[in-house]
Amino acid sequence: MTNFLKKEKHDLEEVIKYQNSLIELDKIAKMLIKRDLALTDSKEKLIKEKGKVDAVINSLTDGLIMIDLEQKIILINPKAQSILNVTKEEKLIGKVLSELVNFPQIKELYEVLAKTEGHCREKQCELILKESIEKIYEMQTTLVVTETQETIGTLIILHDVTRERLINKMKSEFITIAAHQLRTPLTGIKWSLEMINTGTITEEEEKEFLDKAYQSNERMIKLVNSLLIVSHLDEGRFVYKFFEIQIENLIQEIIENFKIQIKNKAIKCIFDKPKIPLSKTKVDLEKIQMVLENLIDNAIKYTPQNGKIIISLKENNNKIEVSIKDSGMGISKENQERLFTKFFRSTEALKIETSGSGLGLFIAKNIIEAHGGQIWVKSKEGRGSTFYFTLPID
Amino acid sequence: MTNKTKILIVEDDLFLRRLCQNKLEKEGFEVILAEDGMRGIEEAKKTSPNLILLDIILPNIDGFEVLKILRDEVSTKLIPIILLSNLGQKEDIDKGLALGANDYLIKAHFSPQEIVDKVREVLEK
Image (cartoon, rainbow over all chains, first blue to last red; front, side, top):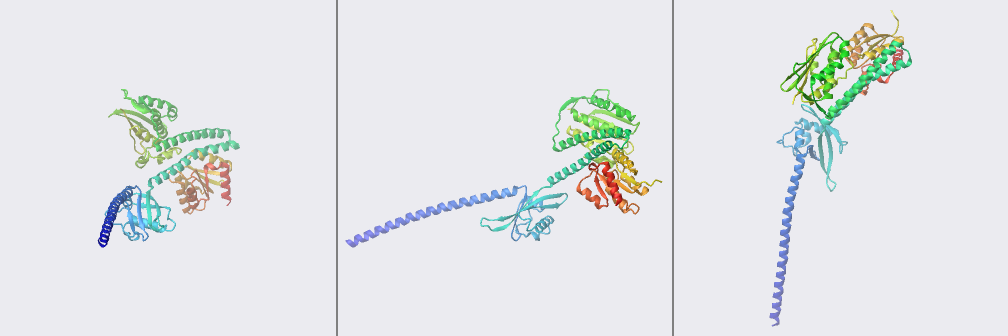
């Protein structure tokens, strides 16, 4: 009996043990399933994350290249491919930079990298690539270091600074020329003041120098105004106050203002006013006045004594065309092309008057174009020039 | 024949030319004028001045070119030349001196008297 009971007890214990282990197994199984699920989840998350990082790298507007310690390319984004002029099909991954000499742009990059090795690390240098146009890139190299402080390669970032450099260059050129242009009348004023002050000149000379110094001063005031207008044009900050005007009246008024100059040179000035009034046009009065004054002033300046100026008006195809014809020395074909550019002075103009700023026609072109019109010149050397501009009628 | 010291002024601005001429004549110099680069070279060859005051921004041939031509020409090679310009960038000054100018003066920074002093200084060397 006792034996039987003992056995019974033992069996029972076995069953319990077995059951316990089953429970245990179940727990493990459940745990495993849970872990597996979690793993799949994070794997998916990882893929998703990698996709995100790839997308970011691919859509960067800067060129991005990563090389390992042996200078093998391990990453290159589409922007970098386009900067270095390599097609997407080129298999660059895994290739060593120094061996890619067939690609002139990569060769250039490698040379800059090699030249600056040691001190360009964590620093910026410049990469100049010459294609049809010269492109300038700011090249920044950074060491790639893992969390365990292990260096695994170098990251190269290429940032296009071509436009910035161009703007900087233009700005400094502008300032250099402007300074020169301002110094000339200033010198005249300074010299005459000194000569008057030291009293070494005759009374007549004193009168002459004072007169001319005053004119120089006027010239400087005009020049400063022109420079300001140009700088506003550059910024695109050229606000227009539009008025509806009858252009014939404005031209008539301006001619009146030039009466003395016209008379002094005995110039025959003809205003060929149309019989029927032209349509009204909406313009920034002050600016259009500036254009007309500049063109008429030029015509007077470059027309010799007893010469002739004809101002005509035409209206067709929804626009008004103004023309100002002088009987000056004309402008060569070559100079005509550059006439409307900033600071340009034609060799013909320099022979007559060296003090012009070279800004008048540049400003005129900007004003007319901002009104939706056009400005141009027709001229033959020795046979005068005609300046035309149009203004739309709406 | 005068035995006055001859100064050639190559300057396109009428007013500055006139002022410079006036001052130098009052100081006892004989002044020859040229209003552009081409004239400047012609006058330098023709009149063999003792010194040339040369502007840089000039019609047809600029001052740097004039300087180069005069330095290459046997008859004008040794004439002292002072560049008198309103260009004041370091590159311009360096370029002028490298081309063989004896001095470089920025117009707006010098009074007529100071220019005369410089002229005398260069002539005495």
